[in-house]
Image (cartoon, rainbow, N blue to C red):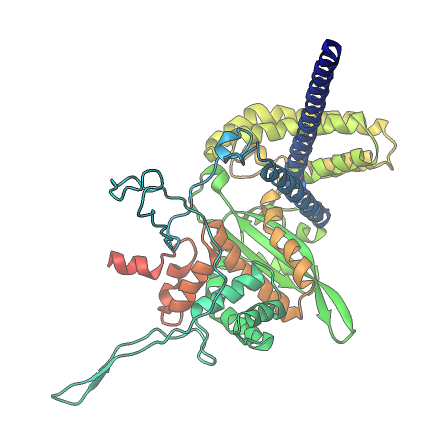
Length: 522
């Protein structure tokens, strides 16, 4: 009997040990899986950051697609982690503040409409049945909720009265509508313009979205509104372009745009050009702005026309059409990022210690730029001359010594010749704190075109290309000044018909103040 009891005890002990061992193995496997998943997330985040830094290169569209793929992978991994946590009864969902590797939770934005749902406490105590209570602090949990988009009817009512003494009729005065025919309000027009030119949603898709709300606005009607709004905004667009022509430092770039060519039954290639002024890197108080132009081809006559009134330093790539512009009026500043990209392309093909050495030397120049960004121009000039100048001179001497030792048809030799052929223009930034080391400002300004081409694929005509350039000019300039383009355009379209033509500068993004603020100030 004692033997049977002892065997039962041993068996129970063995089962407990085995179960404990199994649990340890399971926990270990779960920890390993979590660690692996977190490592993948970390890796993907690092790759995303790297791609974001490199997405403005010549293969920007391919990199944009990779970023989208990585974003989707991140969403799936993080959603899976949240799902696993939610399914585990012993692992409550963590607060963001409890995870040091996650960003701190931002407060909910001010000014949002607020709806309160009140949940009354019971009238009887569930413990003792009592009915007398003392007031305690309410528990308040705030969440953001989505409200489906909607359209409303606005009835403008001008009150009228008749003078008893002389029968004169007096009335209130409503603002002139942006478009008389069809009577779309400025808010609706602003939404359509931003959706088409900033969110890159084709009008036929917008029409389908409105149809789901039970609102019939055809594509052709919206196209008519877009054309009319473009005309209304054209004076402001011309003022922005004039502002760009009047500054003494600009960045420029161009990109191809497919344009329908009905005569040939296919598309042709037009160009969109961008000219940007941004002096924030050296504390220049001159307002930032960006101007886009469209042309049906890439002939050098187009930038010559755009820059007829410009005088100063122009950051640009090596496009041959600019060569006739450089001289007494315009000084060329070349782009070190293009040089760096050439050596990166060498490494993509095969490892190259010489290309790595070039990138290391160029990286030292960029390290200096990181440290002086935002300083006044005079300080930037002094520090560049002291620290960057010697590095740049050594880089040139090293390239000149190394180049003859290389096979001249290799990409590495091509990269070195590319740098040497632009050396004077690459060196301009050393002696002028207002000049940047590269042309990335213009390349960033071209990104909306790269994103838009994926959605609208092509412009419907040369006139359509011009309209894209016009509206991007005002939207992107507004964004440079931290404005919500839809809010800005709604206010501008409300006022522009009645605004004095000699005071239109008041509606430019860097001078604009909402009408309600002006009324309060008055």
